[in-house]
Length: 117
Image (cartoon, rainbow, N blue to C red; front, side, top):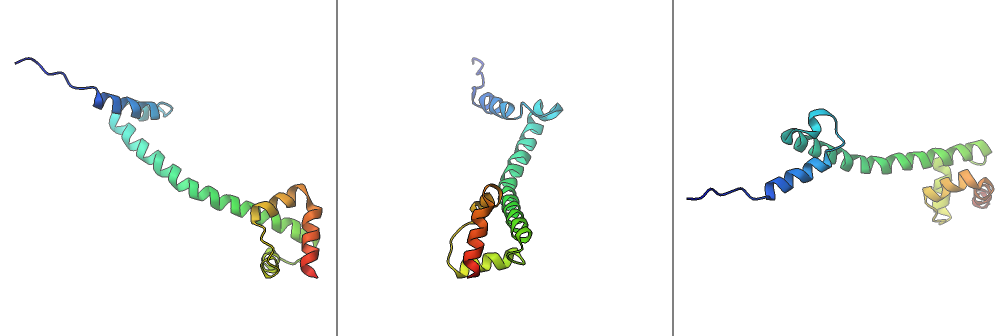
């Protein structure tokens, strides 16, 4: 009976994992078992932090809007501003309001004055 050589599929899978972990330090980029563990850990962190990034940006937008509103003295708080926006049915999201707060404060002031009327 002749000797059967193993196929290339397992080697191809391990090579793909090594390419994923090539930037890791130490054994995390050299040993196959450690590479698989670190790969799982990296993907879990990436999945978790995608949601966290959305949270962080929302917090940043709220902080920027609140700073401009309190600096102007038009409203006493961010929550009253957003509540009055909803009552007047002005559908502006927080991202757009934060961009207005940075680049064009006068536009945000005119919106707040219209809400006061």
